[in-house]
Amino acid sequence: MKNKKRLLALGLAAVMTAGTLTACGSGDSGNGGGGNADSGSENSGDSGSGSGSSGGELQVNIWDNYQLEGLQAIADEWSEKSGIKVNINVVTWDSYWTLLSSGAQGGEMPDVFWMHSNTAQMYMENNLLLNLDEYIAKDDKIDLANYYEGIVNLYSSNGSQYALPKDHDTIALLYNEAIFKKYNVDTPTDDWTWEDVYEASKKITEAGKADGVYGYAVNVSNNQDGWYNIVQDYGAEIITEDHKGTTIGSDKGKEGMEMVRKILTTAVPQSAVAESGTDSLFTSNLVGMITQGSWMVNTYYTAENAADYKWALLPYADVNGNGQCDEGERCSAYNGLGWAASANCSNPDAAYDLISYFCSEEGQKKQSELGVTMDGYVGASDAFVNAFEGTDLSAFTKIEEEGTLFFRPYTRNTTVWEDALQQAGGFLEPWQNPEDEALMATACDNAQKIIDDAIANE
Image 1 (cartoon, helix red, strand yellow):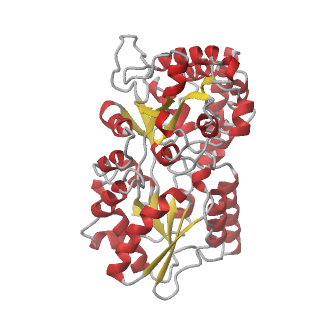
Image 2: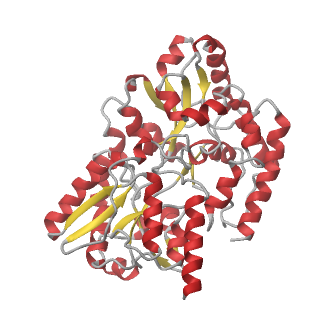
Image 3: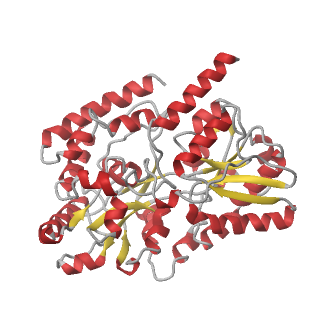
């Protein structure tokens, strides 16, 4: 038993330190973006220890302060019916995983909390999450067929369900209309390709040189909301559907990363990105375009120059050169958090009932109406795009009809290879020296080996 606990501790430590996590919640691109690892302003908030339930209370931990008000409102509705108080604690991104890891190793975990694709397998395999199978079987409000399949599968292990889908996200192109007008560059349309992004970025960077303005910004750790989508557009896969390999080193993978390299030649240098983060550079009016996920809408909606910020459909790759977007040429990664409960929570029935309320069709639609996030329940997110007065967010839902969604790439130990791709020997060198075309092709070969080796050792 001692050895098992030691292995668990080492495993969780590896997951928490291998890099930061991506998406649905992780913030500024210092990151990641997509987090990926980064932790941005929305990851901070009041720290809460999540000390477990006492009496008629449930402790809930999240990491996104922007979601607190809406989620607490929904939880309060549940409390009125159940008589059980819900305390939602917003914990900073890094501290969230540190506290959860510590609790898993012998301390107290919060009763209810968010799970993420980078960590779910580790927690499920070590029986740290409440098995929801019997609860779901008796719950007429929950039918897993109503949720995004990728998110349902993510939080399933050995045939059992350990979390219910909280939300899902998609990616869009964010641009500063004022910058485009200032430098007389046409603004993005739904017909834009990645080549159009490159050309517009080049024009803005050249025209804005004296002002220190660039056409584009991206970070190597911006994967879900960044280069993952371009690679997929060109027909390659970061992680294959069976989660047993990658095609990043294929010709298609190299074509996609070559497009990334071209855009990088017009973008903010990585030294500046590393110092400030893409989101900060954008809100400082130094960047014309970035790509971002729907989880970041609040950040820009509440920014000082929000009126200048517009969302456009994610561009596509005209792979066959026929001048139109064909199936598979416009792809958006999607991810989703899961509502989970501690396997050792003192009131598992109440914990599940709260999760069920959050994830029911009623709770999901309420989440969208309040502008918390898009939903894990298919078809319930329409209200989200209308929750931000004066801002057109249709690009986030339109991609589901006019593009192809693919689930954010993950394996059992995602952070091992994800972190390595950001370092020397991965994509760091070509990211820092995009003028050297050969570096990017070599990096794709290296990435193929990094991912293959990581999967083989899982």
